[in-house]
Image 1 (cartoon, rainbow, N blue to C red):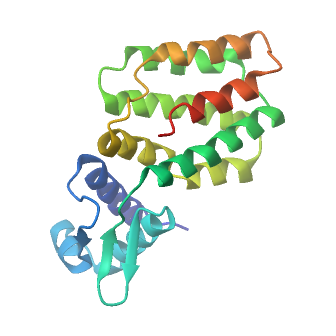
Image 2: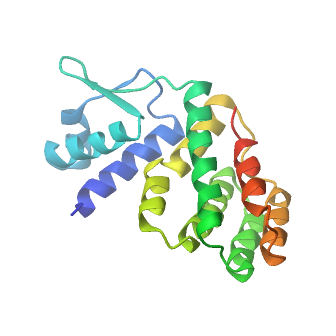
Amino acid sequence: MRSPLRDQIKQTLVDGLISGRWAPGDRIVERRLAAELGVSQAPVREALRDLEALRLIESSPNKGAQVRGFTRADLRQVYQVRAGLEETAVRLGRPAATALRPHLHRLQQANSPLEQVHHGVAFHREIMAAAGNDVLLSVWESLGVEIWTHLSIRLFRMRPHENAREHEPLVEAFERDDPDVGTMLRDHVLAYAP
């Protein structure tokens, strides 16, 4: 079972990556971060391992943890896998359009890139959850979709999911039970790949 402290530290690290506190190549010193947060090094180490699994951090025996240098190819690969998972989810089960409308509305009302990314990811998470496949949802979650989306905007100045109009055709396709909605969803996700 994951510890709440570990999750809080992981979120602190993610926030630091998104905000630019730590840039690619920067070292994250366990001891220093533990002292800053007033915790032992063990949960910091665990949180860093979680970020290493997401391919955000690299660890080496003599250098410790360091923020990976991210490339367009890294992002493209994440978006390609994500697109395939979302297309598969639609084949397994579709959300009710009424479940997507509130997410679309919140996306339309979002005032900042942070809110836009958050609500855009929630929209897609709803689609993934509707598949009714816990393994598929877990794999999708393990991609760190929200983190990679934020990083792509910050590092490569990609446009954020600020245009809710790009999600509207998806909701309409789900409403009319369009047989091509899976392909539409895949193409929608791939459109954000650099």
